Image 1 (tube, rainbow, N blue to C red):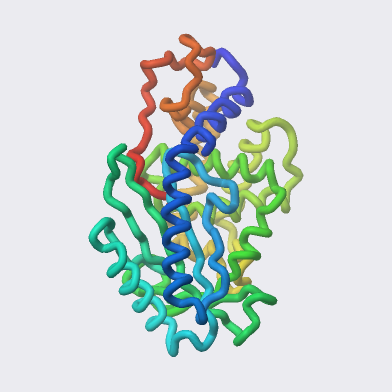
Image 2: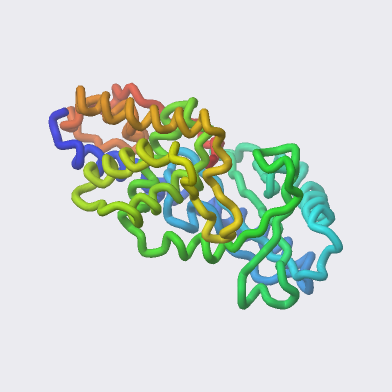
Length: 320
């Protein structure tokens, strides 16, 4: 590698900046705004102000794979059951957008995947309906119950889950170093299909825990290396937890089986070993987004402009 690992990783992050796709993001924001206004108009007496959520709200998004999320907080008496809430919002969105988008039920959200527009862009918005836990208390405690569709995900035995999106966002606020490492781990995740089982929220929480539990400092590579070692050494430990800041009763580490935890530890060890053997292997795990690679010919990190071996995932792929 002609430049340091630290400088290379800076170039990687630069190539995945959301600012590179501002025109596309404007389309996403406009659709999200339209959806929020439609729900507010339909349920004006029954909801609190919708809240932007997800990776974009946390500033951990990468431009190769994304959607936008919006949380819809309903009042406690708006629906008799969480399932009734989920089904009614799905029916409303399907009736409104069914001719121009795929409207699908997901684990705790309703996905709206708009068909490609004249520019070939496919806009994806996830709507997460929630009902306040305590009557008339949402604006104070921000606690919501979400309906869990048992056909999806790993929460088959539960029909609901408690959350606090404000707490989740606050948990990562002002953690600039951690956000950089989280974005790098998302790039690692999307660069290899076998990494899809590791949810972005899990990678987010374990990165923050690494910074909280270990003394992590230095440049970007040194911080990344320390987090990779932390995951390698601790994910398989008995009693290791990753508490959801929005619900202390939800241990995100439990979403992985023991064999998956061991596999993740092994992946970290293998990655560290291969990079130690040959620094150029860093490019395998953390490829530059060739769509936004600097146009400098032989750009100093071993990839020729116009001849990158790394391809950008389709626009309609979404955060895991």
